[in-house]
Length: 103
Image (cartoon, rainbow, N blue to C red; front, side, top):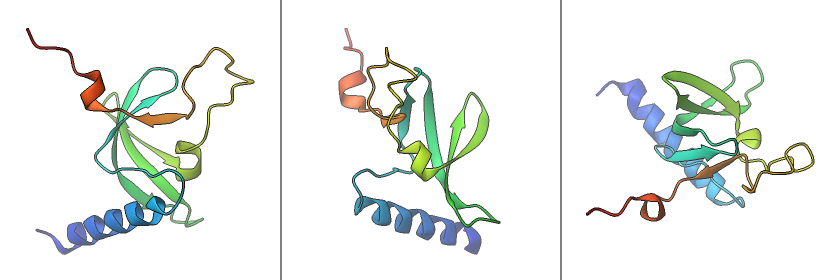
């Protein structure tokens, strides 16, 4: 395994620990539902090269996207989107509750 990849793994684990001390966390490798209905897969976290801001790196429709952690974890603006039932912009999908029953 390449040394830089090991560093990336350690960085991701550190990030999970850091956000565990807050009210919400970003889980690398988890699937999240956006409040507009699409699903995304969190690949990792990164630092912006200029601002050093923490970014969530995720995949959506075969493209990679980066969004600031604070925005990823933020609540939905219910004044702008009054019909949205979801509380947060991105919410982790619980596979146990979303599985179809096998026949």
